Structures are given as C-alpha cells and as structure tokens.
Length: 338
Image 1 (tube, helix red, strand yellow):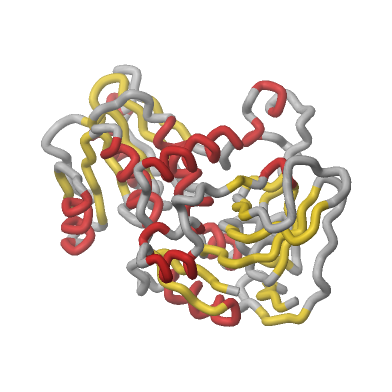
Image 2: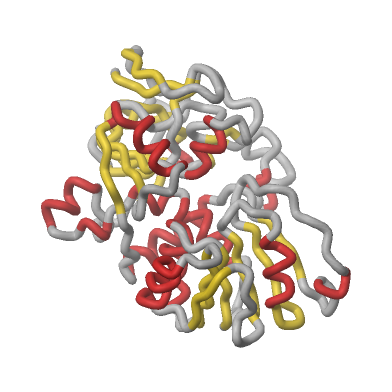
C-alpha cells in the first residue's frame, strides 16, 4: 500500500510502498477514503509533541470502509463506513477508564502519533474506538457528487470532537468567547448557535477577513484578541495554541466563568495578577476525547447538519498540504484523498 511516512522529526514525509497491515485482536482493517489534516500533525512533525512512534504514518481524522474484521470483533460488517479519531486505544482497566475518564488513561495510544494513522491506503484500528458515521455527513467525493461539499465528515473527527469536548466544558454559559477562529471554532460555533448561545469571536489583531467570516456565521461580536468584548463572557474557549491568550480571556470573563484551553499543545502561559482569576474563575484544559463525546457530537452534527469547508489533496501531496497549513495559506481544512 502507499503511505506517507514520517521517518525523522523535522523532515518531510516520505512516500513509501508498505505491506498492507493485518487486523490483530479487537481490530478492523480499514480501507482509507479520506483523512483530514490537523494542527496536531504539524506539532508532531515539528517535534512539539514528544516521542512519536517512528517511523510513523500520521493522520487521525480517518474516514473509510471496513475491509477485514478480526474474528474477535463483533458488531461490524465488511463495507461499513466508519470514522477513526485521535484516541485509538485504552486499557479499560485503570482508575480513569473505570470512572468514565478514558481520555486520561495513562496507557492510552493515539492514532497517527503512537500508532499508525490514516495518511495511507489502509490502516488498522481498535474496533472499540471506531465510530459509525451518519448518512447525513458525506465523504468528500460523495459530497461533491451530491453538491454538498460543505457536509464532508473527515474534519469532524478531531477538530469537531475535541472542540465539542471543549464546548461541553463551558456548561450552560450563554455568552461564549472563542479565541482563534479556525477550523475547530467554525465547527463548534455552529453547535453553539444551534443551541442559541451568543458567540464572541476573537481573531488575530487586524484580521478583518476572519472577523467578517465570524459575523457572517452568526457571531454577535468579532474583534482582535487584544480587545475586550462589549459584555462579560460566561465562558471562553481558546483554540489558538497561544498561552498569552489565557490571561486575556480571564480578563473578559464574568464572575464564575471558565476558560477552556482546547488544544493539545500551547505555548507557555505568562504570569498574571491573581485578581484576574479571583471570583471563582476557572482555567481548564482538554485532553483527548471520550467515545461519549464523539457519539454525542456526531448525532448533533448530523441533526444541524454541521457544515465543513475542505480543500482536497491527493495522498502524495501530504507535504504540500502540511506546508500550506503551516503557512496559513488555507481557508479550509486540508483533506487527503486516497
């Protein structure tokens, strides 16, 4: 099979011809149709996430069809359309797994990081962590044929699911600030607006195009991350990997509000006065996702339905997609098509 392989951190991916993997105990063999590119992929390539499996096949927003089923697996059939997310395996036995916090499992394995992912024609995946995909959400090729290119499902499998966990942590806050209005923000804002929340969008200072896009989506206010909103926020989600935004978001909160850091990697948070945290304000991080998060999000995404914006690349152009993403030259999610 063809695969784009990270052989050394900091180096471009290499196109390799590898043996097709075989599903082990509890696994499915998946024929990959599409795999969306994520900022986490860049963090891995650039060495900002430590100790990746090397050589490594990146990619954790995988859409495909079941090609082969290990005899130990029940509940799937050949040809089923499934999605494979970031969280790829947990032990099911530890304190975290037994208390509905499998996202914190100390032995967890992650798709496209510590186990091979979807920048390839085939991958194997733990059946427990594969999601059945709603018919309302299309593969990229089906979406194009149906004239529904904005309903492509691949970007929902990380930016959407982890974004949804970040959103879930904001509780019933009616005024929601979102710092960094990229892919995850675009998806989660649609859920928040569907649930009649007020969105306050924060972009890079001077990013008028981004602010206009947020307003056109339905944000009641949009401005730079160096600005204060016209009203105090009940909660804020930070999707941009910029630690300096944490104190800025705290200053925008009402009493009792929460700042949720929605990324797996963030630059250092600078010091700030205790008064900015006082009055029971909270800072929370988000680690990975649970199966419950994914199942809930896919249901509501299909109901709305959540729209996505994608730009497709052939598998062999994975390096081009990553470079364009790194340089900020994409106004949509890059999706590799095999």
